[in-house]
Amino acid sequence: MAMGRCTIFTPSGEPLLKDIDCALPVHAKATAPAVIIDRIAVAFGERRLFDDFSLRLDGGRTTCLLGPSGCGKSTLLKLIAGSGPALLTGTIHLDPPDAKPECAWMGQDDLLLPWLSLIDNVLLGAKLRGELTDALRLQARDLLQLAGLSDHEHDLPSRLSGGMRQRGALLRTLMEGRTIVLMDEPFSALDALNRQRLQDLAVQMIYGRTVLLVTHDPLEALRLADRVVVLAGSPARVVASFLPPGRPPRRLDSTEIARQYGELLAMLMDGDSL
Amino acid sequence: MKTRPFLLVAGLLGLWQLVVVVAGPPAYILPGPWPVVKALVTQFSVLLSHLLTTTLEMVCGLLLGIMLGTSCALVMIISSRLKRWMLPLLLISQALPVFALAPVLILWFGYGMASKIAMALLIIFFPVTASFYQGMRRTSPELLQLARIMGAKPLAILRYIVVPSGLPSFAAGVRMAAAVAPIGAVVGEWVGSSSGLGFYMLHANGRMQIDRMFAALLLLAGLSLLLSFVVDRLLARLIFWEPEKGKIT
Figure 1: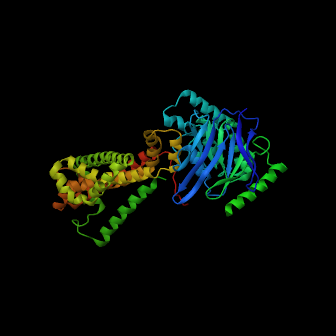
Figure 2 (figure 1 turned 45 degrees about the vertical axis):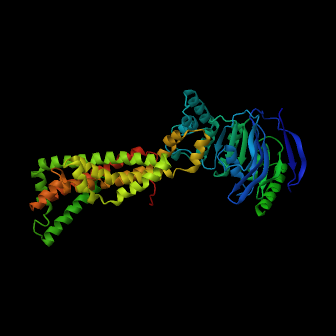
Figure 3 (figure 1 turned 120 degrees about the vertical axis):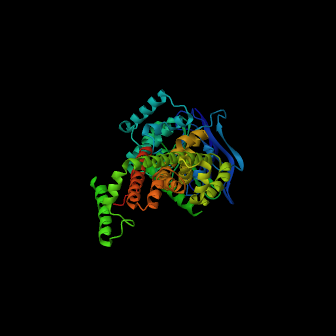
């Protein structure tokens, strides 16, 4: 069983337990590499987004990143994807270091190409890399069936509902077969029911990968995260980091979750006024 | 459904006839529809050969213009260094009035079709270049980022993402080009030629055969409409994913 070093913070941001071994939830395999963000500094013009910022994303786990708008959540995601601004200091590396630095991306917008059928959209990555094979096509078809989209395989995105499109975007992300998955508010454009369905599907399918999910929604974080991390301030720092009890996707009707939701909300409001 | 075009044409013809009846201009100023139709019939074989010339000039000019326009746009999107050289050249090519260039083109390319095709090409390629280039530049940055994270090479991004993203704008440019293609061909024929509807019109005008001139004009209008219609149909097939947008009612 892989162990990670971590610090547990109180909701007010005080470190409670420093640099302890934290046993990871037992349900996940830790075959995917951990992402280690090591004392990075990043500036946008005059403004320092990050200064001496460190965070570890445990391998094979889902980390949900919460924080007020503009605190640098999305930038952090882009930095890991290698498409963000340049690091002034520090590094972002993987553990084990010889793991392939490849990731898959899913954003708020489904970004389906309007001129490709749903299945071709799901296979976009392979097509762009010139690696399209019949085996992959079969795999995509299986995934579409799992996601309940078999009947719409050959439809153009304009003929699909918002929920279907975002499901397609999720499948496209999964087809990449990457061990690291970066998600930037992937469910926020959906209505409550579709959001919950897609979250369940995502948890089921993303199992065992290293996921960083940026969200505005504390409930979403509590439902999906192995670890919840809250950022705030400028430059951003981690004001809280904890492991909600149980395994995702969690039911939202327990008193423990309700209590944590209240605390998270208070923290986010504080962070917003920083 | 399909009666509207006929109603429109009939209405225009009626209006024309009305003006002729009410104002009573001499036939060498404005002939009525009937003499023009008669001219169209009696001169049909002659008109047909001129029509063929003009059609060929327009279609060739359009095809070559689209090819040149597309190539220019692609070069500009691929290389920003070349773009900085090409942009002023393109602007200069449009700053020179094409009508003023017509005599030069005829001097260089002769009295035949080549000079008219060059003329049409010159006014056609620019709208195609400008709109296709702008369309490709407006490719969603998130889409480009996604493609890069997927590990796509620049050429694959161009082929699968950037070019299709630019196609709707390209279509708008081509529609515009199809609408101005007849101007290039006809102006070229006016300045110097021995064949084509423009030449025929000038010829008829010189001999006060205004009915024949109008007959040629009618054919030219029909040809332009047909060209626009065909181009529109082909483009709708090219950008099959764009539903009809912007309908208010």
